[in-house]
Amino acid sequence: MSIDNLDTSKYNIAEHSAASKKYGLMMLAVLLPYYIICIVIYLLQRSYENIFATIFKSTFLLELFILMVCMFIILGVALLLKAVLLSLFSEGKSNSLKFKMIGGVQKPHFYSSEPIKIWQYRICLIVYILLAAILPYIVSLIVGDFMFVLASFIMAYWAGSDIWLLFTLFGKKGGDYIIDFDSVMFYRIYIKKKAGDKNDKVE
Image 1: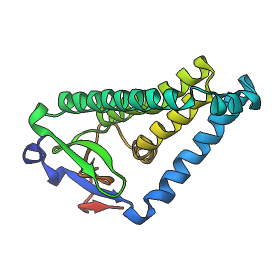
Image 2: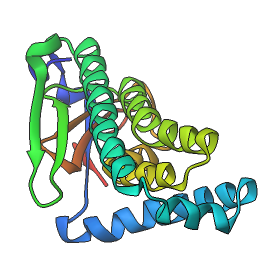
Image 3: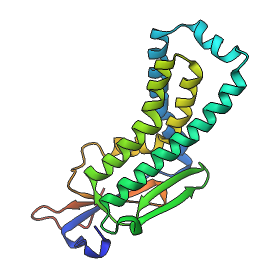
Image 4: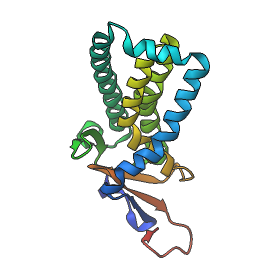
């Protein structure tokens, strides 16, 4: 819904952000447990010898190059699909879609310039996370090559901020509105006021 068409007098506004200096710690808190769980699951199916055999085989550099190319392709597809979903959920469609390369972390970021419902935003995040982080790891389990696991970890890093956003939206009402900006660390929620509410902003 366009900001101009959103009657903000009927909503409380909650802003959520994290300082850019804390981005690394946030990524560590989000991804470290995921990495540990993934390695444990992999080792339950394979062995330590499998890991060393993967790293020291003669085709290591060739496989590494092919994986890098595949990673960029999968990340691009995941990002484009997220952009398509954002456009579908936005009143202005593709005209509301914005793109920015986030400085410092060098993360490509699509966002909508207008608020959309939280349940719609969750779908955008989940689809991106599934394609960019979960699917590559599932492939690594099927292939049984630890290089695929490492590649899936790198891709999970790119989805780390989306995972963080999904966690912070836990418990939020799907019918409320959310808008993020040209940053992976800041978003605003418009919460439908209840009878008797007077404050415009909530923590």
